[in-house]
Image (tube, rainbow, N blue to C red; front, side, top):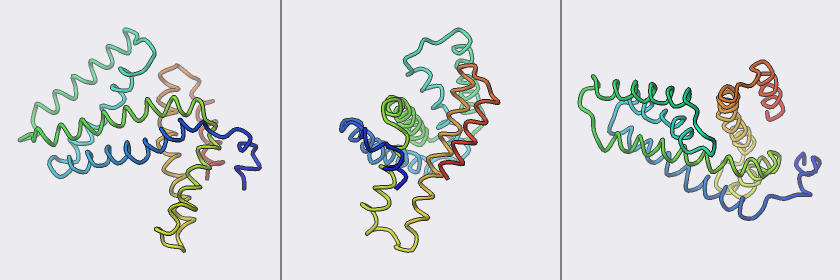
Length: 193
């Protein structure tokens, strides 16, 4: 209802963006989660989290903007810290588990870089409507009937949490005004829920 009232129906997302978005959701997320949980079977959760959270550095390296000396120094120091922790005292390190964890980080960084282009071209209301369409209608036969609204609310919350975090990260990287960012994110999350 709100999707159509908001006027987003006048400009539907391009078919290519919808296909890429579906590919990111189906294949990209599945590959990232598969690597993550396979790594969790082989290495400690703390080490897994440490390796997976190299994804901001990977995003910075893959971004279209030029790295400044300051950002480069921060990436080197952060990567050096990760190497010290990984090499220094975690007991036996399972190379396959570490590779799977790093694979999850690479897939997630790729996911962010590719979806950034889509998000710049497609209205947020259109993206929300696609999620609502898939959970509310296409996957309805596969979900418990009395929990459809809970799944849609979960979809909104799952979308809001990483988006909120990334807005703060990108605002900080671009030296944005933190109080303005906070107020905009709070308003956005309130509207989403």
